[in-house]
Image (tube, rainbow, N blue to C red):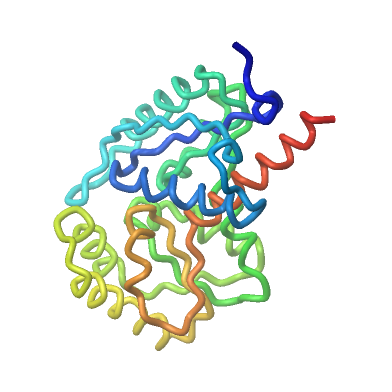
Length: 241
């Protein structure tokens, strides 16, 4: 039995997710929505072949990150995913991008850079505030990339608020709780004359809908989904020639 003609030249996407576990399904929904938006996918056959590995990692909301253990866990998951017949890879986790160069070198497949994809979306913006898990914020991977692109990362002194919001994603499902926590962040950003918020945590991305603000919000998970689909379309076009 042979594959349908539509699948003969279709590249396979490899996604390392599960960091945290509850963010995996929402990210897949983002990816499928991008397929509909970018090229009008409707029928089952229209969507890309996708292999997803949900990888447990040693991340805790109440203690410092063991970066050696975290990098080992992510690298292990990425290498196992790469052996599943995929054509290119992405990691649906901002914190894992602290080790991006090491991870990219550990596999023989292209690995999309979520930080680069996100920063490239910030056009004609100078003052940016980052909303991210503490390890991502402390590592400075977004702040450095923003500076390299002529932007300023405004420190809102709000990491405790972000920590509380992240903890709520693990313990609460009450919309009013998320709305209250987001309002503390957005008020600080508006007071600091920030021009855009970058949400760089997939667990937090699922709660962005509760943020009431006039500020543009650039969601790193959305940027990664967009980049994955663009790459897939380019590869499918190249394979069909």
